[in-house]
Amino acid sequence: MKSVERHISDILGLVRPLPPIELDLLRAQGAVLAEDVAAPVALPPFDNSGMDGYAVVAADVAGASGAAPVRLPVAGDIAAGDTGAHAVRSGYCARIMTGAPMPAGADAVVPVEWTDGGRAEVAVHRPAAAGNAVRRAGGDVGAGDTVLRAGARLGAAELGVLASVGRRTAPVHPRPRVAVLSTGEELVEPGKPLAPGQIWESNGYMLTAAAITAGCDGHRHSFVGDEPSAVLDAIDDVLMQADIVVTTGGVSMGAYDPVKEALAGLGTVRFEQVAMQPGKPQGFGTVGEDATPIITLPGNPVSAFVSFYVLLLPALRRMQGVAPDPLPTVSARLSAPVSSPPGRRSYLRVRLEEAPGADGPTAVPASRQASHQLSALADADGLAMVPEDAETLPEGTEVAVLRLPRP
Ligand code: AMP
Ligand code: MG
Image (cartoon, rainbow, N blue to C red; front, side, top):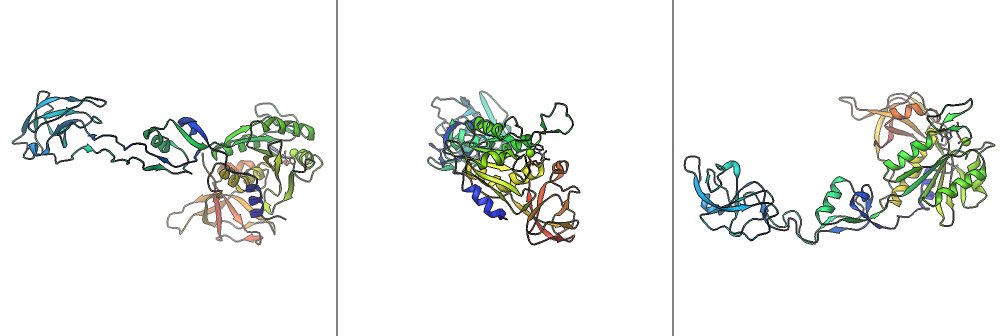
């Protein structure tokens, strides 16, 4: 059987970072920056007031106190956005608002709270040192300073930074378009009644959501039955709008495994047994004129889920222009003994618990671990790995746990 690592690297070999495009800022949310971004000008671009108050010559108010306030005539008002040329001479002041440009000659702002708030004349009852409440030009970033590096994933803070340096668009690796296609004659659209022998289609929703959570554009396509020609037609349909195709079902050893049947004939997709549990039957390769990568996952819902996070996620990350890292791992002690088939690495659904005073988290295995038992998945926050050479692990064994992302 093929090792998990080998299969991950084979899938990685199919993909490259998607070529950068310029996207409007809000469309770029969740995408990965393709180039360093620098500030074209200093920020703030001009000296301005950090508070509402009075722009003064600091030396004028050096002796101000509650008992002996300094009285200054107010020469005028300066609001944020004021583009006029203002100046303050010793012995005068200007009323100034937060963000308004500092007038020439003034070197401090007395916050309104330190004054009587006068309009024509103001009584200052506390001294303000030179530079008080003044935001210096370039105090945030200097002209030409790099504010974001290639590889940054654009969230709220990053988009704010881009806008603050004047960008309306950003050069990003676009979110990979992941087409999810489920197969199975037994599948029924959720919301519709079940006939005997049928089940509701769940993998499509699950994998599409996983792709979106991973920063991709996930698209759930309508599922198809177990006719190989229908599978090929459906793949043809989705190719136009996909950077990568993910199928589920139809890749095991059964008589009606249409994905395997349909794709094996093309000669560009390989079907293999990977030494993992769940998720043993796997396929990968390319389809269509553009040699679009296709990953064929098994149909059992837990197998499909584990396969996505273990085998596919690194490739999706590479397509996004970031390092193809696996999920982050934490070390935890098993709260109960577990078993695993020899020669295969098990991925067990566990809940991570932090007991007070314990020397690390505890991994509590879900009671239902079979690959069709989807219900325990929503309770799990990690996948505990049982090594290939272990058949049983006693309670208390330290295991590595892949932390599952939460939306
Ligand atoms: P297969 O890999 O096609 O042999 O399917 C394995 C098991 O997973 C069968 O019990 C299927 O009914 C089930 N299954 C396959 N595809 C789906 C799906 N999209 N949603 C829910 N269960 C599925
Ligand atoms: Mg099937």
